[in-house]
Image (tube, rainbow, N blue to C red; front, side, top):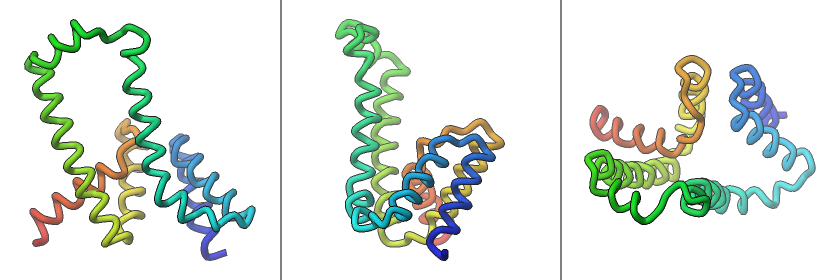
Amino acid sequence: MATVLPLLIVFLIGLITKNNLLGAAAAIVFFVDLMRLDRFFPLIQSRGLEAGVLFLTIALLVPFANGQLTMKNLASSLFSPIGVLAVMGGILGAYLNSQGLDLIAVEPSIIPGILIGVVVSVAFFGGVSVGPIMAAGITALLARILIR
């Protein structure tokens, strides 16, 4: 029951706040645990992030495949002011994500705080639940600035 209760709470929070991704994730982990397939947890934990990033990258590449983005508008957008800022944002985002992964590896106790922050943002501020690793990266940055 000790392992089930947090998952049920996260699932209920996902339902109440209409955060479908959070609810589905909690339900899937709960189902894997319920079916006594916990031997797959290490695989899910080690490769789940890679799978998520793979699908996110696929979604970002679809505009190339369906013709929304062409080489002509790609080149012009990269050298526009917003394009340059997008490159800088990509660099900063990837760096912060790496810092977030490092922080989670050494301090997994921050995960509930990140989840609560994401849920509060989705429920009350119109946030989108795609950035728990980025939230960890921002946490790492804030910790460096405010704690150390």
